[in-house]
Image 1 (tube, one colour):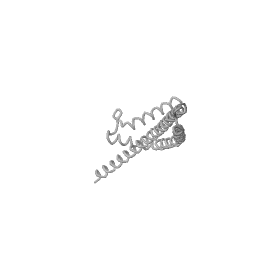
Image 2: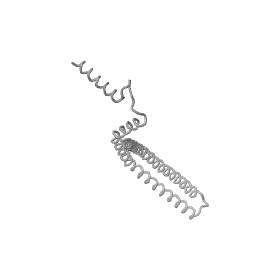
Image 3: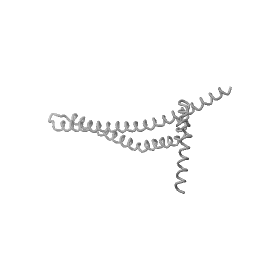
Image 4: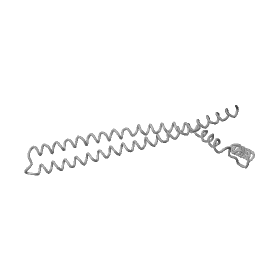
Length: 168
């Protein structure tokens, strides 16, 4: 069953090549996901700070209004002051959350960098996988009736010989 063994071997190579391509695609996707998630976390934290700042402004406005109103009771003033204190505390928490999010940016960039390094380390296997898949699906490429790999290597050798002759 030599034909069966050859088909099984070819299938194993194609499957391995597809796995290499899939892993590379997953790494690229992971890099972009990390970046997008980081941007979303920053944007959400900034939005919370802006909303908290607005709430502080509104609470300060209400306190000023109550203080200037001669019919306001001590309870009204205390409630307005309590609302301002609560809004100020929420603003401080939002600002702290934004600071923590910004501090995590460095870690995200390190993680993305490691993913890029891993992807770059897999490039030789990726190139081999693409070549083997193209051979499996498209057949050997030819240039003037000569297999492309041979044609390219012979042209490189011809150029080398030409340079050697020119240099001599």
